[in-house]
Image (cartoon, rainbow, N blue to C red; front, side, top):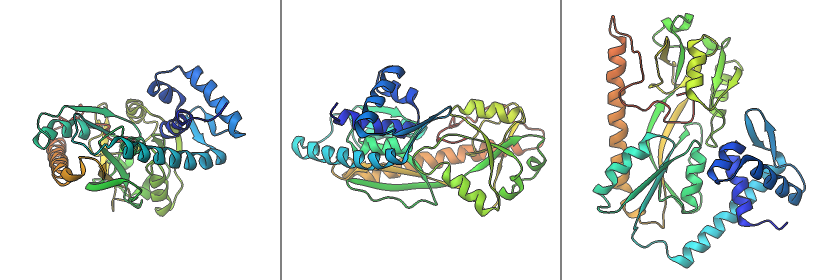
Length: 330
């Protein structure tokens, strides 16, 4: 079997999603068919590309080697196609993607800048997948995230705008000993079991482990789950705690507290290709995105102030509806 571009895209998609099931769904194929194709690719390259486990797949050393070269080949091919087809023409449709509701909110405001241009929206789990889709020209604009410990890459055809920085909090059950404090030291949670979402390709959960190491401990992580509702259930059952965004669902006896010193900070980003029609309008688009994030932040502050008032207890997700807008515990 000769390797083709579709095989390289499959390998990259598997690495980005970390799941044969999710990659198969994205490719509109069955899990057994994708597994068979992966086995053929691995025979062609001479070894296993992924470790398989109950929590998904992750690249082997050979897989990392192949992925770097696969992404380089795909990027070069995308650049070639752009040069041939002249993608810099005014858009007939705007394709926007992201890891949470910001993409959907921004899609409603884009007609202010591109009137009468239809907008299509898709959301993804992996911020890295969103970036790769923009790089490949399959999305015109991406709303994505990374973490402050990471350098913002300046790779090839992409441009970025930093929108905001948001400190991560921690979600605990209401009668947890640390939950009585208005702010919690990460080091005081060293003996707790944690629930984490899987790697997102943009620094999670590496930044969490690094923050714990700086706080003087190695976390115990018995739970690695995609489904944030399952993480919420674990917390309400007093089985685990989880890093989260401030708007994590506080129903069923779950509380959210800030971490002292903001040891883990999430960064909201906008990404686009410099050779796309988006580039000329990027300042205006970034302004709209920042307005949306500020509005969401104000709504959350209002919800939290109501929650903290005497006699008040929040029993459901916030009105802003941003629970799970990023690929971590909240």
